[in-house]
Length: 388
Image 1 (cartoon, rainbow, N blue to C red):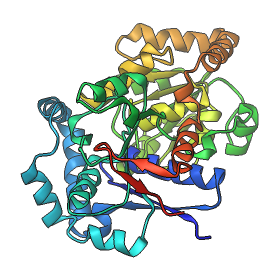
Image 2: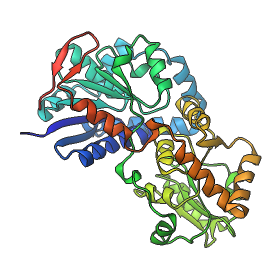
Image 3: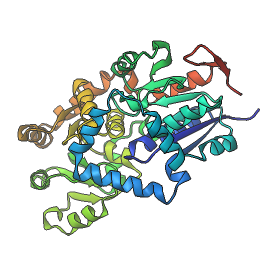
Image 4: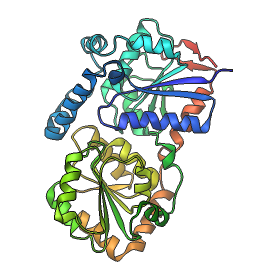
């Protein structure tokens, strides 16, 4: 009996969409070795020359003009991608998408970004009979995710489910799965052992993350943190921003035995596990991983749009605070340096009260349950058999 084939399509606009796809793929394979998964950033795969140029332009816009990104997000919030945009995406980037699907012969397609989601939806209107799941990788439901050809929606929270229902999507086709995190985040590890393994001191530790693209923090914040390095260990993880990493390493302010400046890392689960506090941009994936590791979070200058919604959700769940006043950081610095046991108790309360959809393997279990059905329901009442 051949393995069930799951094809996951994403795009590289930010790192979270593709991280979610890989997390789900690895989780499914860990739980059920009879499932075969393939993750593809579809635009980059089909257009390896043009795709990176588009992503670079988007990255620069996010870095230099975040308010513009927020304006565009809000102005199109209730709208799906229009027919002209879908046609342009198909002609310019995705003309060969159907050939990829025919070659790989998936039993199920899961999209973790709106663009491939729209492309597969278009192919389904033209006769593609593969079930399509849409995994919304934020704590909001922008209109670009919504297409009538989607068989099932996988969403982060009950609130996002309600948002989709307001867009006339029936409740039975929306599943609160949470956002998947890689199996590396599932298992707790002793922080002392992790600090030793990573070459850090066994002392109160703050992890500062600039996101996958290493977006910059202001100098006042960095200086304030660095001034406390005698009694609090600081791990700066600046992602793919190599220029910033080089500047920080040459800056005398960060030349302290308790300060570690890192670039892109694949062991974020260990860095989070070794730390007591996370200061970060509120990307959906990073926040979800932080919740899985039970680390308190301080959110720094969310980009208008989905990051604001992510921030609002995690604050409302008691898993973090907005770093909008100096008193917020001062409070945590005081706790870490003088009342460390209170920080540990806070983390224990966090983990005891976490919502089911934030449990690390919840999304994988939900998707496995859906894969085990004999049929996949289509919103228009048709039933399509899933090959086994």
